[in-house]
Length: 545
Image (cartoon, rainbow, N blue to C red; front, side):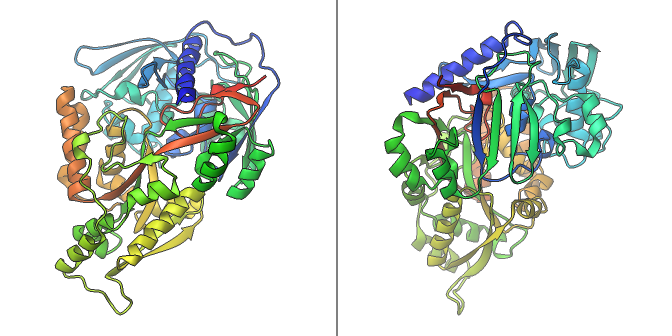
């Protein structure tokens, strides 16, 4: 934990330096290459079109604000592209002043028009995965999914000049500034995105931002290389080159790290038994622990499977899973139980909503039988499929297999089916998956980021293959951000969490993990993402020499 605290303090110092005098054009970074591995390739570098591929957005593009871990260990919002801002007394008008020394890697100045264009596109571009973030901004409904972002801005965004703009909300939202620090709110060059058209997100030639790095090359399913952006306005990183290799095989990755070919090892990609036996012993002084601000869950689709439409069935599934055993064995204690939607450490976490979900396989069978279910000739009460994304880490795949085994032993025929990532994602978005196991990690420190993503509308619930249709709940979820009194707002989120998970069992909360990274001898310090993502800023990696 001492190493983690030291990294957190360094993160604050780093951002503070970035907020000062521009470093662009000063001393170039020493020629060093940071070697990284991914288990699978990204789908896109366009942060509007993904909710998980954030590595490139975090390193190539900047945001108005950044979220860092402060001295107290809590997430804090600090200025990045924003030099100054003010908020009206009613909390509905935000006036911003941009830094005047920021340029994109092609040399063009970053202006308020780029900001307005970016945010309008996030709402209006067809297929956006992030449009809901601006649902409180004036004009959201008339622009959503329309494709109308080329020549017009959201009515709630007013550009005064190159460095001044304002955003008008239709209703107060306490978490709005935190949204602006999320990966989804990377600022794009209007000229570049317009020139790229549909190639934006796919062609590295158009991956032009104002961040510390540029994409030098990208070979699908093999890897990516990044280089230092010599026009970067902040402090030059220790590593001016980053080589990312796609290594889907955990054993290969393990050997590559131990042979010095990888500099930051993501523990999520390896079997936790190896982490415990090898890395917590031989590399104990090179481990960095990061509490992941996320909830690992099992989704249960009420629309795709007749049995799963019954809340008694969903509750029986939850009661049949020994979550503590999963934590103790598969992830070797590097996690904690969480019984709702919100993880510990997130604004909105409720102690009162913990403890209700207990492992009770006999009770689960009794519940099913009282609801009229009987075992068939195959020995099962009912059947459903757990769809596995083959890009999942070996640890998550072990968790999925353990859950399926526990259910089968309790008379529930859960069959695991493997899918390539693209097919899995398409099925999930179409609402066609019976069940899957995944983790949602905070984009910004507000409960709305969790609850609205999954239950903010019927379309979102479908897109997450939940099939949840309680309109009253969705109306309340949409209204919650506008509650001005903080205590009242948190109480509403706690009530919604209780309704959705404890009463409706829309998903089964499994655990909250502690994310482990291991540094090579080439690295002296590593700052994880504030929310514990696998994706992190390469600028937060310090060289050992």
